[in-house]
Image 1 (cartoon, helix red, strand yellow):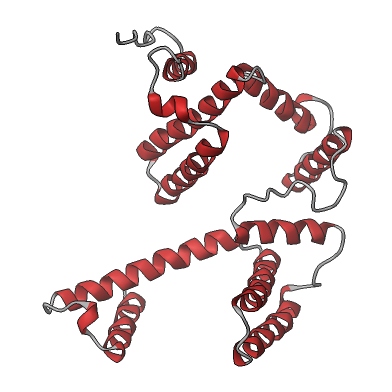
Image 2: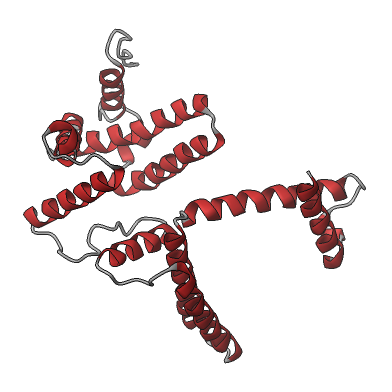
Length: 272
């Protein structure tokens, strides 16, 4: 027998929590939802966060509303599974983050005196460090940088943490020498016919050093790469369309033809 849908008279969050409870109900719930656990849902949570970022990047506020809903569903899903395990529930999640925000904003909720963004950021990091110490967590300057972050973003965060204790280049200009050195080491491994793990190691060094350069320039490396990805996609599709207008597909074109058409697309962007 179908379940009654939670009434629209409930608040949005209460209604969503009841929907999830119904989906996870062993008596008549959804077989797919019942089969899930934290590990199987985690990839969807990450995907939804990226879709939120994509909607923001495109400036689509209507889509952003929908994507935020999808992300909120992920939080409710995890909280429901934790409640079933008698660990915590959604209310505990909400109260916990509210308490944390109050604790980490003493300049708003207490008389702390941080009145600039930099002062606020310093206070935030001090509070986080105190929280880790109170929990008996790792005291390393690198503690708390999530392993699941995209590798380029994690590299930037690790280097930022190291820089706080003085382990960094003095300025962006000095990084170029290290980038060239890392590229030389990569070339040497390629010329020596090194195995994949060695190439991966040396290429990783190049990317990590470039991430440090981005930090010193005040540039978000993830945002920079997204921008280049978008640019490449736009130019590549324009090249495809230009050949398609002639009744041709890329697989029928020589590389030098594609290079010339790519340069024409870039030239048209500059002229525009």
